[in-house]
Image (tube, rainbow, N blue to C red):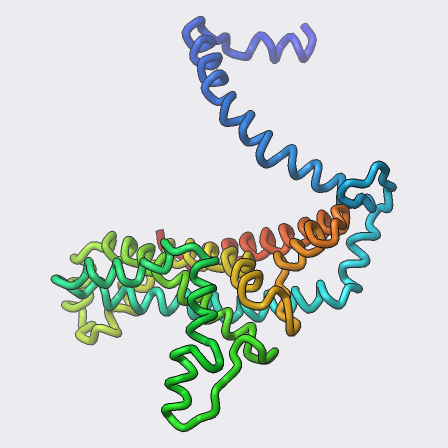
Length: 304
């Protein structure tokens, strides 16, 4: 008997019931698989195809140019500035968004009667649309009409042009990003804090951790490892996806472009579809590397 025949003979035969269950499973999985194929896989293949051409929106013909779009991207001053601005924005939003969210969650978690009020108050910005939020901030930071500069002038200082000073633009938008994401991170940390058994805190207190800071470092912080990992990854992705605040507040003026805004300009304003597709792939690779790197690095320190 041949090797293939021996393997086939050794393979256990499926019963009629097992075959029927497999067919039913495939039928149930088919809609989700087709949806995944139509929404994610096919668009990614089309995107990769456009990225190696010089296609422009509405053009009747196109030409294969290989990796030229990717090479041009790293020699494009606007793209490099947008990349730098996005990295600076993320470096501000990620640590402040995570640790301020944790701090507020710890404060709210200790409330009894007013907990529901503070949860709603901090979560309210999450429910607002980013365009409306940016419009409100535009009024608040207005040099002559905004209440922020009114308070600055009342204190005896000169008004600050937050939205027209190049050095202040990215930190100002990062402040808005922190304000918007704070409530979401707070809710995630509250869920993690609620899941920590109170017996662990009592055991730590009996073992000598009388100070709340000691109990936080020995019990709360290690037990929040999985939640912290999730919050860091989601906050990082949100930070790199900044677009609405730039589109509403500055429209890329004063060197305030970000990666997604640059993609929007190239793809929809300038109709450079092939080049925009290449920039999109670069953006996706950056986010993918960041997410996987954070997960692999932090997962080793997480206590499940």
